Amino acid sequence: MDAIDTLAVISELFTWIGLLGGPVLLAIGFLIRATSGTWEKTTGVIGTGGGGNVLRWFDTDGDVHQTDATSHECEGLEPGSDVTVYFRRRRPQVSRTDSPDHDGRAILATGWVLLGLGILAAIVGLALLFA
Image (cartoon, rainbow, N blue to C red):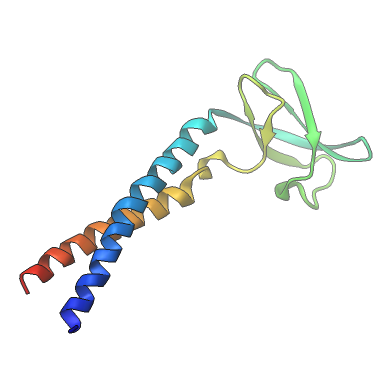
């Protein structure tokens, strides 16, 4: 087996991995994005209650909601500190302090990289047929 044959086998392997794995990861990433739903952004305030710090915010209807301030973004903040809160419009008691823009982003990036690698490997494999 010479160098061209070895390169052809490696190209074939990367083609299969990229062209099969890339679209699967892209589908999963887009599914995560689609099921993540819509989040409303507001400003919450750290308060005290229930034996520790809590996070309170107003929803779009003006109702107050609260949850334990246990997220990474709330660590070390004193009562009265402002925190960005994302909550669901239909269920405002469901909240998070990390940005929902990141949902599925790593899986999508990996899927695009694998798909690109698969296409590039397929082109290399075709070029090796004529070498």
